[in-house]
Amino acid sequence: MALSGWIEKATGRIGARQAELKLALRVTIAGTLAFAITKFFNLPQGYWAAITAVVITQASVGGSLKAAIERFLGTLAGAVYGGMVAALVPHGSPLGMGLAVAFGVFPLALLASIKPSFRVAPVTGLIMLLPPAGQAIGPLAAAIDRVAEITLGNIVGVVVSLFVLPARAHTLMMEAAAKVVSLNASLIELHVSELLAEPKGRSALQTIHPQIRAALKKAEAAAEEAARERKSHLTDAADPEPLIRTLYRVRHDLVMIGRASASPLPERILDRLGPSLKALRDETCALLLGIAKSLGTRTAPPDPETFEAALRAFVSETESLRSHAFSHDLPHGSFGQVFALGFAFEQFRKNVEDLLARTAELARKGNAEAAE
Image (cartoon, rainbow, N blue to C red; front, side, top):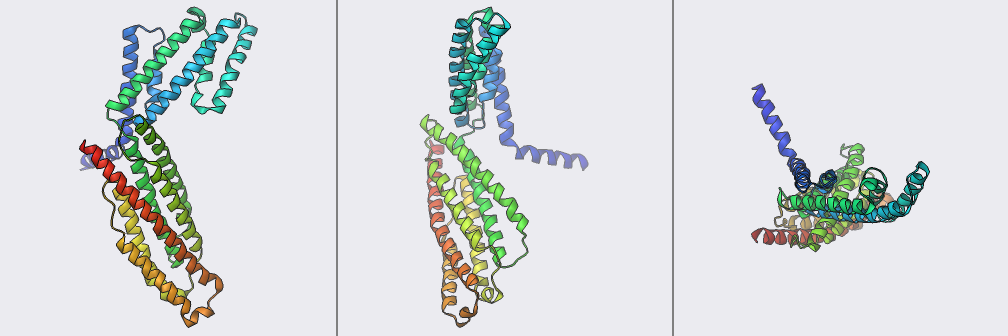
């Protein structure tokens, strides 16, 4: 029993890390294959090809393309300029070497600080100046070898990313977006619980906001890689940018709802609005969790009708509260809080409609691509 339990636990942990295991396998294959090719062609410093293949193999094809382009451009700039400095600036003495390093590194470091895609340029330029490569075979030959080795590593890394357990950036983006929407459902529950004076705890709010920000940044980064895949004609999936914009708009709506939920409502208001507010919370959470599931599985989104009906019922209750006699005895802040909440939920409804449309579009494109 103990052994079977351990095996089951280990299997569960492995299953939860499938994406990481696939990436580790791709990186291993890319590095090994690049090294084998350099040995076959007897390249003098073939280990740079293996290093490059390992470095540029990312979690998605789009990420690998970006890393390969940046690595190639940085290497080309560093090799060309570093080779020129090595050929033109005498560096046989320690003083000469110091001057050559300064002349060779500073312009490339400035370029990398202005354009981060060239961040490997100063490293390559410095390597061009240091022995043994620059002195043993000459700066021009060293530059050619370096560019050839890095290019080989880039090609191997991209090919492995394409054909060995490929992970599309669109899939990673959809998974990250699903995580954002799922966390949004938890945030709605916490906000409404604050209004209802339920003991959910402020600490939970402080924990969930960083999680949402991290998930949004992850979705945004994956969307950039997915856009690169589209431009490279590696996929016919829908444009990812509208989904990211909608997620940020929904995030803004939740901030507004949070501000309106900063303090519990008075008991007299809760007697009137409590049932409709609880129904709105439950239907909103159910809708968001349904959207999250649809994003994760690329299926059609849920019908928002029950959510919209719950929102209409809540707004109707707030309107009737306005004309109710006892509302004149309520604190002005509490009364304004109710209508601020209604306004925030109405804005939220509009952006959720857009989120549903984006989810449906991505599902259609995803199914069409799978069918092909």
